[in-house]
Length: 137
Image (cartoon, rainbow, N blue to C red; front, side, top):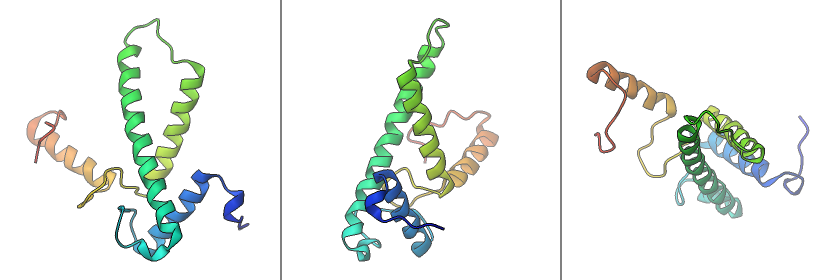
């Protein structure tokens, strides 16, 4: 493995490096703005900013994806090349973060994507659909 100094890595790569180090040390990716990562010193703020940025990007992606799905119903619509490239990069980044069990929503307690999916399957079995009300317990 070739190690590169932080100043040779993109901000995404630096953030991922910090997140993976955090996951190795703590066994999860439940990074909050304060708490168990404070021992990282100056890197703590960098990790907090990275995590906040990824959560914001994820929410923007969900919003764009929903808008795109609505527009896609119009058969003459196609996503502009630049927007398509941005969406593809976001999907790649989200996929990577999902693989390390990144927590997309701040606060405690947190569930992994797999745990949420299991809950959704139970809800569907009980109710016959997957349209979970926003304020469902």
